Length: 276
Ligand SMILES: Nc1ncnc2c1ncn2[C@@H]1O[C@H](COP(=O)(O)OP(=O)(O)OP(=O)(O)O)[C@@H](O)[C@H]1O
Ligand SMILES: [Mg+2]
Image 1 (cartoon, rainbow, N blue to C red):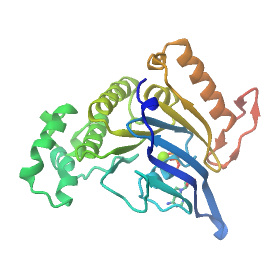
Image 2: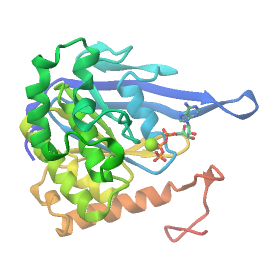
Image 3: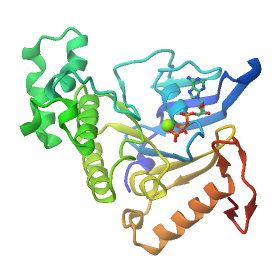
Image 4: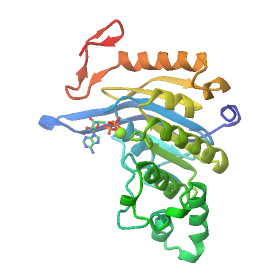
C-alpha cells in the first residue's frame, strides 16, 4: 500500500500512556500500561486485541474523551487535553439520537456548532448519497437495520471532515457479508476523503485487511505486544498465503495472551490452545 513511506510527522501519537480506574477494595485497576504509538498522517491504523483489553479506553484517550492517568497524547504536534472537532469518533454502541431522523443525526455536528441549516444541508445530502442512505433520510434509528445504523454513525462523523476518525469495533455486530461490504465502503471513504483512520477490532482478518499499520494490544494490563507494518498488496487478498500466514501468527499471539474476562486471570495454555 502507499502512504506510510511518504509521511513524516505522526498526526496522532502517545507517550508512556497509562490509565487506571478505581477497582475493588479501593485499589486502582491498571487498564493500560505504558502505551507508545504513532499514527502517521493519512494512514489507516488498526488496533487489535481481545475483549476487556482496554481498546475502547485507548481510543477514548486518543480522542481526548478521557484523561490519561499518566503519559501524554499529541495531536498535530501539540498535547491533546480535550476533545476537538478535528478528531471524530464512532463509538462501539454508535450513540445515534433515537428522536432524530437519519438526516438530523448526520447534521447534528453542524447544529451544535451553531451553523445555519442552509450552510450545511448540501453536505448532509452529499454524504447521505455517499453512504447510500438518501432514500432513508427521514427514518428514525429504530427503523434502520444494524448496518444502516453503522453507516449513519460513520456518515455523522465524517460529514464534518475531521482530520482523524477513531472507530471502535464499528462492524462487530454485523454478519460476514455486510461486514465485508462496509469494510470496502470504509476503505473507499478513506481513499477519497483523505481522513486518517484508527480502527479498533478484535477481528484478526479485519485488522489485516484494513490496516497499513497493525498494533496488537495484549491483556491485563493492556499493552502493545506487537506492531506490524502491512505494506504489500497481497494483504488486500484475504485468501493469499501471506495473508493467511499473518492471520495464523496473530491468532496464536492473541491466544498466548488469552485472559478469561470473567475471572480476569490468564487461562492455562496447552499446545497454544487455552484449556477451558
Ligand atoms: N469508566 C470505567 N470505570 C471503571 N472501569 C472501566 C471503565 N471503562 C473501562 N473500564 C474497565 O477497563 C477494562 C477495559 O475496558 P475497555 O472497554 O477499554 O475494553 P475493550 O478492549 O474495549 O473491551 P471490548 O472488546 O469488550 O469492547 C475493563 O476491565 C473495564 O471494566
Ligand atoms: Mg471496547
